[in-house]
Amino acid sequence: MIKILITQAGTGWSGLTKTEQAKWLSAAGKELLAQGISQWFGVRWDCKEEKNRELATERNAWGKPFLVCHPEIHFNISHSGCLAACGFGDEPLGLDIQQCAAADYFRMADRFYTEADRELLRRTEETDRQKAFYQIWTKEESYAKWLGTTLPKSIGKEKKEGFCRWFEPMPGYQGAVWTGKQEEIEIQWV
Image (cartoon, rainbow, N blue to C red):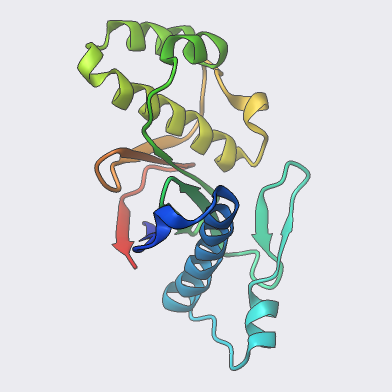
């Protein structure tokens, strides 16, 4: 089972600058990582130095992080809008959440999506187009994160291995988890 922790920025969020918001989201993602490895994997620490050591990460050649002391724990962090999320599994996973915002969907789809996904978007009713666009986007990004590659190396591939599970963390957001085997997802709000 894939377990996902999600947190939302509290009151006062709108008064922060974009840089302050990005710092908050990054720190929130790291704190969700700490909570998840403690809650589900039994990793404990007694002081800040131990916590920092247990949470130390390195990145593979494409930038996918892994825990130095616990490479057997697979995780992935994502954030968008006012949400931060961290997913955990027994095998590699890719997690993406996106705040749904107005965009030039067709221009972006023509640039990044497969022909099948572009056709799906064209056939989607205008009232459902934003949701469809972000479901495809989160599918693509979670796939790249699962593979541990950069988005340009994987986006728009017609043939994909593995399995994608979509979820809606809250209205106005889309999320997806990509894994090597079909698994249920459990979401906990923090």
